[in-house]
Image (cartoon, rainbow, N blue to C red; front, side):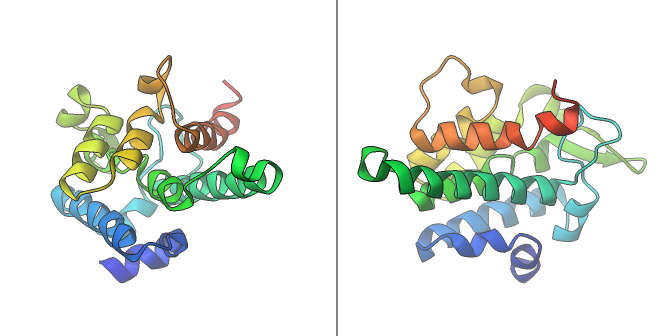
Amino acid sequence: MRDKLIELIPEFELIQDGELKEKVLRVWEKALKLRGMQPEDMLRMPFTLLIKPCPANFVEHTRGVVQVAYQSAQGLQKIYSERMPIHMDYLLAGALLHDVGKILEYIEKDGEFVKSHEGKYVRHPFSGVGLAFDEGIPQEVLHIIAVHAGEGDGRWRSTEGIIVHHADFINFEPLHGGK
């Protein structure tokens, strides 16, 4: 499972801290096992149920968010340097894990992905934090997962949380017609 995850989402390899990378991969493995999915199943899974038909799959969206967050952070550090400290491994881990809870929030039924029973009650920022907490993911990364979506609006976001939040919406709004 791990090799296929890395093949589908090579951005796991951007994390420099080996222990953190291992924990992030374990979160993904756990989520997939809980749902009874294989990594390849994520290629059929839409990244959102809000756009029908969904123009991008879950893997593409995850990779897009990681790439936009990573490249934005690199650009910001190039300009602002130590005036805007960014913990790159936390940023990458948060971007990789921001939607991992959707694996529990969505379920395939009759060939279509719909909200799961769990997903009707607990949205992916919360289930994602739960999955990540159990694997010992640092609080700074749990924060990014928790505040990346609307649940974080009006709340304090770390620099890494702000970047991932905007990277997520950069990868959503144009596909949703700019809404």
